[in-house]
Amino acid sequence: MEFLYEYGLFLAKAVTFVLAVIAIIIAIAGAATKQQHKKGELDITDLSEQFTETEEDIIHALLSKDEFKEKEKADKKQAKEQAKADKKLAKSGEDKAPSKAHVFVVDFNGSIDAKEVSSLREEVSAILSVAKPEDEVFVRLESGGGMVHGYGLASSQLDRIRQHNIPLTVSVDKVAASGGYMMACVANNIISAPFAILGSIGVIAQVPNFNKLLKKHDIDFEQFTAGEFKRTVTMFGENTEKGKEKFIEELEETHVLFKNFVSERRPSLDIVKVATGEHWFGTTALELGLVDSIQTSDDYLQGKSKSHKVVAIKYEVKKGLAEKFSKAASLSAESFLGKLLQRNNIFPG
Image (tube, rainbow, N blue to C red; front, side):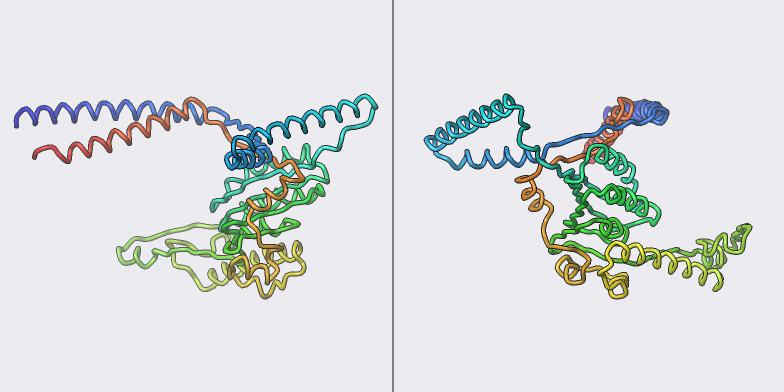
């Protein structure tokens, strides 16, 4: 038992030392990361090529050896004929067949504060630098909404596409509610999966109040403001009826702006009927005019790949060495502590 006690004491000291070293490394790495200006880069993926490769892989898997050889011969023959045709056109001075129009695919999976708008801004700017009127922007949108100013800016980013006369399609496979629908309604065309959730054209604010708890423990809360309505309601002070009325008035004003925004972009909507804060599944949303068709994003893009070149655009901030090291150190520490706790469970008392 004495050996186990000494071993346990030594192990505790070793663990303390290791954790202290890891903490220092993480702190240094974190400080270095903050000092560096994060730069991102565009990641471009040819989805048309992926669709084609997948289709060919499946076809090849279904063919017998003889059928596979015949197909290879036919493909080579077709490629030679196409090369000859292109060469002939080049000699005659005629232009080649016009290139396919593009479908630029962007993903937006929004959080409450819509922080993803910073990447969306870069993606939209990149697309607008090369897009032509015959091209299309396709946004796979997923968001349950959040802060008004964040989603207002995200909607404005999509509106830039409309202002440049580039067709914009928004696809909702899961949810586009509240601020999410504020973004979706900007599109020329909205498609939705049958059970996707849409709508929630309303405004909500929830504020807990601890004033009674503070009074119960004889704790005073003092707040100083200049301006009658600088602070309408508070978490710790006693909220007045006048303050509550003003707060509700501000919510109603925001709701009116939201309804006007949707009405301007989808004038055929019965805004009074749909702006009740309710949400609906895709099939009902179609009946109400909130969406234009029922279809998944996968089906839409596969169909488009037959006539267009489909390209996914994603802006990502690359993590620096210090940030990667910091994350790795954190994960290592977490793993080490987990294993240590497991081992301690079998130590004799």
